[in-house]
Length: 238
Image (tube, rainbow, N blue to C red; front, side, top):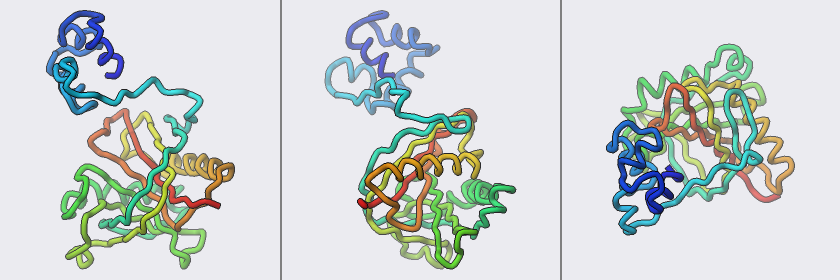
């Protein structure tokens, strides 16, 4: 999309939107227009008229990512996230059982296809949050896993759903892109990503701030051969 935008302005590879669409592998002009608008928020014609600017995604620097199990994980970006609220269906996950039977993955998939759509007050209707909590009473052998949606309010939800309130804080956000559908993202891929995150944090000026982390998955981006997940790790200065 970024390369085609340059061609639209320069007239390279033809003077029309159709010429550009065909050059970049689209069979139909309308398919290209929809893809362009989805990426940049404006149509190719609006962009060519100079009525809007767009943010380009440059070719990535391979030194900024690491191969991990049928995919890559990128060096983190940083965000400040306000207090956030989540509603879903919590389960206590034994670490050993999860490695053998993928229990967290099974719980998350069951929740997303069976109950996710019923949660009211969702902030982003297509976004799945896999929130992992480390209650001290579980020790090192188990965690609480809350497949959930981020919601605008917990009012009226606590009776029907398991909920969590996470304080405002700073996060390192690691993007993972894999060659499979997100529903197949299991403890084995995640464990390798966490190991990478642990190595990163040992050489950074930060430490983990709270007893949780979460996966952010936009289901609208998912394909059978494409998984995109952002892993949010709460951090604070050492």
